[in-house]
Length: 303
Image (cartoon, rainbow, N blue to C red; front, side):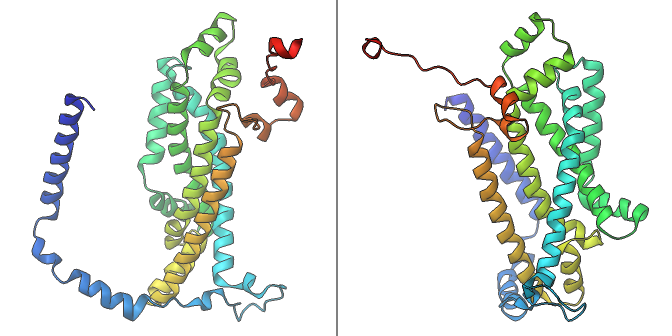
């Protein structure tokens, strides 16, 4: 780093320390906090109550695998379903909005309103959206799906239009020289050029929504958070810990699956991997968009 960068970094560090000390205020109130946490952990949190993996007494479980009737399984599956539907709805709505918000794809009179709309949708926390939709639809999964979808549009839209603005100018200039319309440029150039980033954002958002399903469930919007809220009210913290461990394990699995998918569509380097379009388009169209380059034949081989 050069001297200027070092000074800026050091200044930000000092500013962070000053603001942190101002927010903490009286350090005396923190005395004994760790001891209290240790007592609470030993008496209420540990060991986890794994009865959440046992089948519920009502209704009668008729499944071959008993644990599929458990609170943990039912709540987690419902959370994953809510997160999946909300993520896909959010992605479909956010994609055209991100095209409108990208300054290199849309005129300023469209980009600014689109950015304001995306900012408004992500400015409210998901739990507030959940409360608002519960007033409309009552408690249940529909309120959770709508709440997740709204803030997913806000977050994904911002990530997507920033990815589109980050692509190189050469493909866009070529499309303009060929006489392509803005819509054609966005669909045939901008989206394919930034598609790997878009896919990464989509996978990250799905993982985020699975984790955040525990939060919106606390207000009755369905999913495993609904069970966590029930156990919190009953002060059954050992069951809460067990459910949180289940959520953690599921998120880890989703993260590994996402990493494998991102690796599979990585187009960098000479590794022969499928392109992003192979996930969404038929093989013929995908191969036409990304033709395999012919290997150069050396003079020795030609002889």
